[in-house]
Image 1: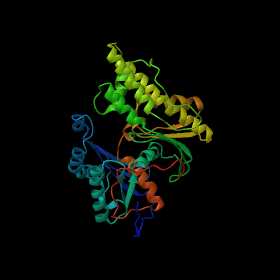
Image 2: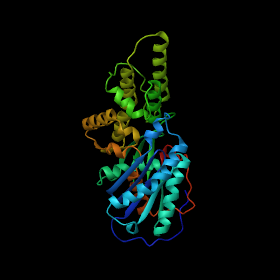
Image 3: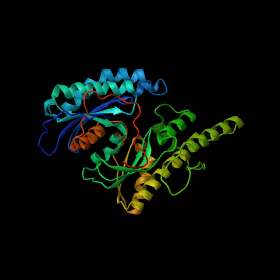
Length: 351
């Protein structure tokens, strides 16, 4: 990402006022923060329309963003009780995500920042998920372990500073969110897959021995084997005409997918001698995983920073939170900033 050489006369006040804009998938979102205090959070979703097609249709998502972006930003500023002219910066997701959808939010943010004469801050969507913890607990300060689990990324990171982190482990193939979506399709569940798997799992028992990925001393994840095991189990039962409980499959899959996330996050905290784990990403909204994290952290005496569910799924509050990090570091983007479908979190090791 290219940073601007333009010099801004930044305010001397202690807590900057930042507008965040998010449009990477099917949520059009805007939020305003003053420092780590969330003043407003608006999310306008096209998920109901997308569900008719069994998933996100990029063209529909882009059109929905175009129709909703002005309302989302206007409401966010109004509900924050501030004026647009009070804003110190505009933070916006520039990737990763659907390029057409990203361009709607990015174009609006560029025009808004230019009109106000304030810095534009390009935000990596995944770094936004990581920054949501700062809103959950404004007193949170590094170092700590970050558990990231979303539709496209699964990783355990050692957060050294607000800007510097070390990737201890990540997925070798599919992310946790992708595994939930695949399980949902096999079980005949509608979009969005994750919440519907969780709902069905409440009716079942964890009684099927699905694999919990490979063992070992590292922190990498692999969900391809678990996905294949679920597919084979269901298909074999169907081909043999044997009855089986879809709810039990959902419950057993959920346990296999989530237990290892909690267990490895705690192991990383103990190895790094961290007393805090912060979690972020859409999969962290899963109720079973949240309960598991609370259980294992309490057992080990580890502090857990868990954002509310609405701040785990896509939202602009997390984008504004990461925008604050970049604002304080003076990392501003110029107006040539473009949308990017894929932005790697980084290679394993120090970043």
